[in-house]
Structure formats: C-alpha cells, structure tokens
Image 1 (cartoon, rainbow, N blue to C red):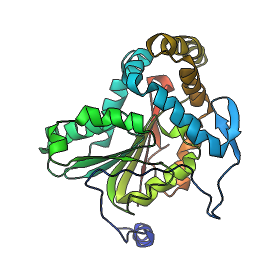
Image 2: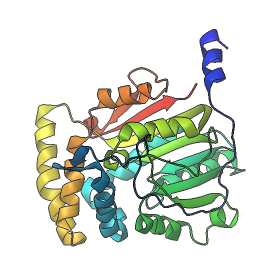
Image 3: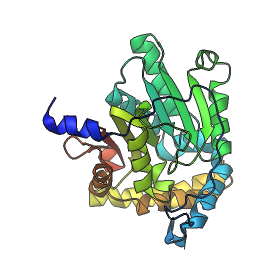
Length: 295
C-alpha cells in the first residue's frame, strides 16, 4: 500500500458499517443547507428556471405520471438499446461475490435485477444484496412489483426505501461496496451533493458508477439525435403514455446535464479516484458510464 493510499484510508470516516437488510421507508421533502435553511437558489427544471425548493416536487410529479409506462417508454425511446447499456454497466462493474449494492434512483429495478442475476450466475448468489432507493413512491412500487415473489425477495436480498439521493440519512457511512445511479442524477437538484453522499456511504475500495445521457460530439449525429429527442420522444410520450409534457422535460433535462469531462471533475472533487478520463462513452456519446473509486 502506498503512503498516499494509507493516508486516504486513514481519513475515511468509516465509524459505522451496518447495511439496511430489510425494507424501510424514508421520506424527505427538501434538502436543507448546512445552516438549516431551505435551499431556494434558482435552478433548472428542463429549460425552465425554478427555485431549488420547487424542483424536487416538480420532478416527483413527472415520475409519478410516467411510472406505470416507464419501462415501455424506455424501450420505445431507445429502440431497446437501454437494455444493452445496462448490461454493459454490469459487465463493467464485474461485482465481487458477497457484496452490497446501493442502487439510487433505482426506479423499476432493472439495474438491481441485473446485479442479482450477475451474482447468481457468476458467484452462486451468496450473500450479495441490493438496497434500492428512489425519491418517487410510484416508481419504487414498480420495482417492488418486479421482485414480488422472487427468490431474492424471499431470501431478503432486496430492500426498498423512499429517499432523496442528496441526503441518504438512513444509509450508514462506509456500508456498501457498489453505488449505482442510472438515468437519475440529471433529475437531482444538486448533482454534486449526490456524488458526495455516494462517497460517504461507500466502503474504502468501493465503486461509484453512473449511467447517464450525455453529449454526442459528432455534429451530424448530434443533429439527428436532436431531431429524435425533440420531435419523436415527446410524440411517443403523448401516444404511449398520454403525457407529452413529462417527456419534453426529460429531453430538456438531458441537455442541461454537464458534459462528460465536467461531470467527471465533479466526481473527482467529491473525493473519488478515476481511471483515465473517468468515463466511457456508449453509442457515440449518447450515454456515458462514469466511474470512481473511493480510496
């Protein structure tokens, strides 16, 4: 172990190591500033500017509206490619046996399911477990339905909590091996706080992984992508989910999220160590997998 790594581990606040093994419910309405006041600075909600205190409610309303059709719309919007992206996320993670995943903004549970399937296939299941967290109860209910009656549920290897990614007060310091957030962080009011919370809850040696829509750099492909995003996706939302406005927001939120290099720096600023540039582009930069290690 290098001296620098030893110093880093010595600074790590790992006084508590328990992991939630049973489902608990935690509701959080607004993340407060450290001085105790509500954060009301202006922020973006898609292309609109709103007070920070409003964004959480607005985002929650969007996902309450789309929850029951969320998986169908993902297939329609991406032509099924989102499944390949999530498969690649798990292959890139290559989780070790008997490890614990915190899946934040876990929604309908497809990342959690892939983690447990990977563990069963490669490691015989063992004690590996997932704690799914989502701020939206309707989205989390879809995830609970996915796992209802499964062996994973019967064995207590899957737990669910309603909670805010910016303030995971029910998750102990240094208690999880992996932290994933897929297509969720761009909807958070303060992405930097989300990453800081991820660093807090991960064990030393733990890994943060974020799958998120990103910036297509090729100008020709970017033009085609914009046409699909701003014209096709809202129309699909209107036809398949009866909700054009929510899908207009989701498209706009992608454009407001920081580009790859900028978000990679946010991850490093939170204390993570990245390898190379810290991310891998998929499908010409339509999405990127960001990764950081806690040392």
